[in-house]
Structure formats: structure tokens, C-alpha cells
Image (cartoon, rainbow, N blue to C red; front, side):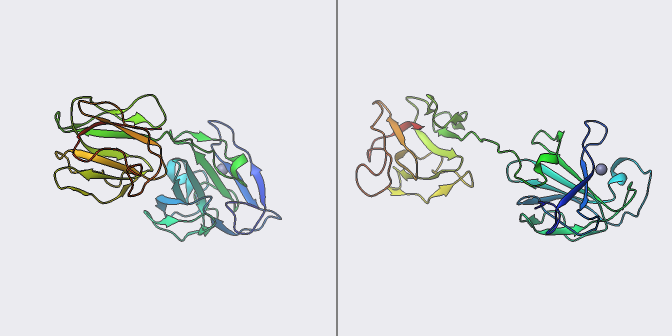
Length: 258
Ligand SMILES: [Zn+2]
């Protein structure tokens, strides 16, 4: 079943050729037009309406009415020559959601969908194998970083699972920023746990205040004590001494997640 045509099978009428034809042209099998659907979940990046049938036109106008969507993994898809467009810029769309109707606006000779796929580097790749299947999986390295209270700055990101750690031995840590993970820290000055934060929506910590406890859900992690060494790895989150990394009253200067 097509991922870009509503409840239809694809019939390719023109194939991708690098630099010559940067997409693939499809119609509904048995040569009927139909609604166009978003290939995957994403957000509408561009949305052009009101372009007439204009054979021989060039540049962006040759696309006619079109929709460009950015997907969660950084890939983009583009749907051109639409008769009508039913989404708007900035709109979040779901896989299979109707975004317009097939047409022949712009530089088109006959009703069809011109479909393009761009990789996260904005290069147009052959979309043919994605007409019926998921976009390539992009493995995302998970990164985290810590705030140095002495230098008053965020230190460089380090990769989860690597031999590196976030922090500077001897300098108190004031915050943690991390991809994906749910984290909270114990503020030594205030004497309580700060709210949970997740996936860089916010950082954990009060910058400038020292941290003496860390909890990270679904991770194995450990902390280094200022003037001391690494404490044992922690892989759970609860109220026991094994359920967080740190010792109340002792300043943490580095953290490692594996
Ligand atoms: Zn085309």
C-alpha cells in the first residue's frame, strides 16, 4: 500500500534520475487521481497554494502547489503538482494524514504526484524504495553535558556509553543537560530534589548551586565527588541509598552515563 497516496497502490510513471529528475512521479494504479497523504509523522515546513497549471515553468513554480514536510528523524518529503492543499505551514501531521489532492499544477503534463525525499543534509535521494516503507533509520547519538559552577559555563557534550565523562574534577557541577533521559538533581544549598526534566526541554539544576545527588531514569550512571573518587554505578531510581548517585552534603564534580 502506498505511503503517499490515500488507500491506493503506486504506479510509477517517471523514475528518479539524479540531477535530472529529483523525485519519482506516481499515480494511483489504474490511472486515477486521489488524495495525497503524509509519508510519516512530521511538521509542514513549506506549503504553496494558488499556482495554476503552467507547463514549461521552472524553479519553485514548476512544483505547482506543493507541501514539504520535515519528519522527526530529519528527513524531508515533498509532494508537488497538487490540485489542492489541505494543510498549512507549521502544522503537525501524522503518517497517512491527508495533505492535499493530486493534480497537475505547475510544470506538469497530466495529473500525477511528484514525490521527493531529502536526507538530513538536504540532499535529494531516490525516493522509490520509500513509496511503501519507512524512511531510513537515523541512529542518533545520545549526548549529555554538565555545567561548571566555577567556570560558569556549560562544558562540551559527551556521548552516552563512551569512556568520557561530563565535568571537571575539582570544579563543582551546577547542572546537567541530556538527550532523551529523565533526570533530576538534589540541590545541596536548597536541600531538596529539583523537578524532573527530560530530553533537553530544560536542564536539571540551579546553575551556581552545587549538586549532591543525581537520579536518571532508565540509565546506568555514576558520579564523581569533589576531592574524592567515583561512586558505584547506579541503575535504578528510588528512595534508597542505591536509588540515586551521590552522598548528601558532598559536592559532585562529574557524571558519567553508560
Ligand atoms: Zn516529477
